Image: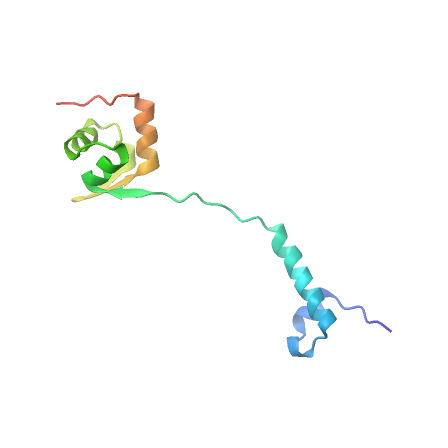
Length: 107
């Protein structure tokens, strides 16, 4: 005589009261359920801080980075609160690419 046990009944049953076969059945069911859910990959944003961060992103000197900031080309990538400057690296590079190969700098 074999008893038919549903997964819901196994979930309610304490592990210490399960037979080995019931426990393995529960583990196999758990593996099937986790395999169905794909992991969402969220791209991690990379931020740089300050004028030195802009210089690091573009591989230029600090005075040139200051001119890039003043040009307004990457304004959408810059968040500034008082003296703290935060730059989204990927957005800054894409904005500079859209603007062209050279960034026109106002003197």
